[in-house]
Image (cartoon, rainbow, N blue to C red; front, side, top):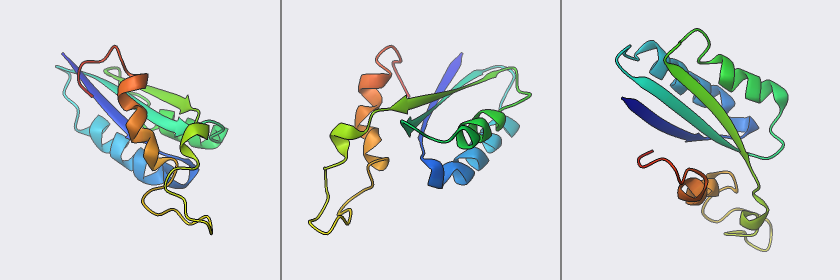
Length: 108
């Protein structure tokens, strides 16, 4: 049985995301396969990407996939005239693209 998990992170949120992935891995069951997808804005640093992937290193039943997403269409949503975000950061708005990006997955 597959368990699909989706995270959204940018360079500023790598540590908490890596901790959550490590927790999933350490508490995983050999009865399941875990597909962990991390949506990031395009251009995330190599070090950040490596840290996310390394969080699941050594677990044969865990597959980690970093999906870089174009956020250009989201950049102007919820911004005030002084460039403050009124509701969420551009990265947080990636949640609205989950269904579009993971069409083949029934449940995430």
